[in-house]
Image 1 (cartoon, rainbow, N blue to C red):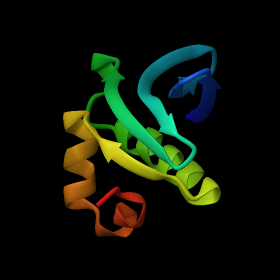
Image 2: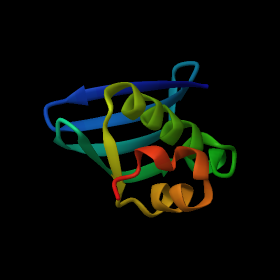
Image 3: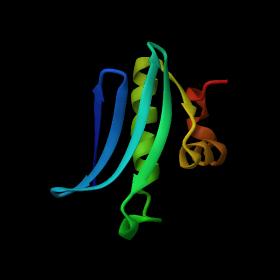
Image 4: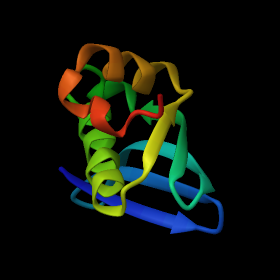
Length: 94
């Protein structure tokens, strides 16, 4: 699985791909130079429970750390992952 980040204007996404097929997307809004808001997560049904959403979130967290950006997780999946995973809370907007 490969995770590709893309930003265009005030929107961004992490897309999970396997070979030549998209298997999931996590979208975010760029709310400023130091803040993004994770809006939604979609994973193809046959990939549910296989860590696709987690991998996309971790790719966005990695990018946030590199750019010194904080994250507001409005998406229920992302919010749940931040509650469960203490190791990624350093990028959480308090």
